Length: 169
Ligand SMILES: [Zn+2]
Ligand SMILES: [Zn+2]
Image (cartoon, rainbow, N blue to C red; front, side, top):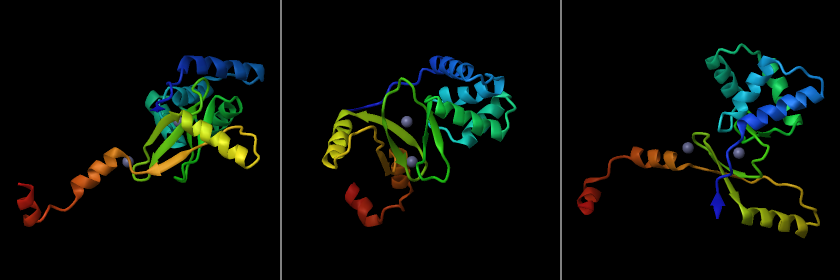
């Protein structure tokens, strides 16, 4: 049914990025590589804020403009994908060799989960066909409340009444 997509191959993506820069005559500076690495090795969908924090923790001094410029380079190389999950900021994830996958987004904590589902893919192609479109690609985004937030909601519920407690016994 639904499966988690394969993890990103960080080293291969770094190599592809260096090749892309070289082909375009753009220097593969230490800063650009540091930005790319934070996205390739994050293992999740990172915001620009996440990237800046990761760079700081590693002791890399990279300006905001370089972060944005590098993200543009990575996107034009087809190595990362940009997402707008309606949070007021963008998120990024490594793309190459991972194949298409879809996202579940928690409205409360912003957690993003991934899944791949063959039926979704087939359905998308069929819907496109019904409308006379040739299917190129698609994006499904499911918004809801994640299991952890639902658990927290249940725990935070006001204490049950004496009557309920009596029944539960
Ligand atoms: Zn949540
Ligand atoms: Zn994803």
